[in-house]
Image (cartoon, rainbow, N blue to C red; front, side, top):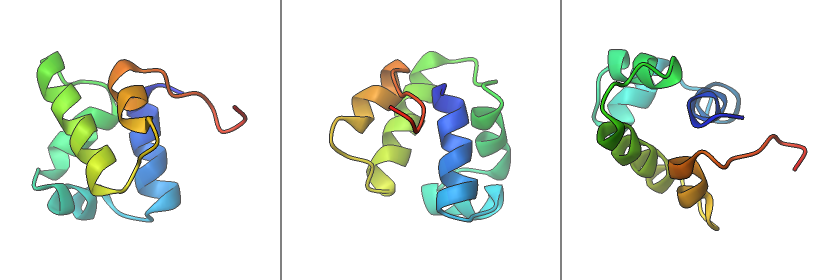
Amino acid sequence: MEPHERVRYLRKQYLKMTQTEFGEHLGVSRSVINNIELNYLSRPEKKISLLKLICREFGVGGGMVEKCVYGKLGSEKE
């Protein structure tokens, strides 16, 4: 699973939040969340900082930050 897909999964399936709610919790707009989920962010440094923030804010630990940032998250079966 790609990082942008993982963000959507986390938001919808685990947290049960709308894009607006998720964005408000992170201090960004709904359109930023939409762009993350569609993998449309054009500046890699912005994408990395937002992925780190998402991992930190929602308690994703145990090496998951690095996996989020570097795109090494696997499927749930791993």
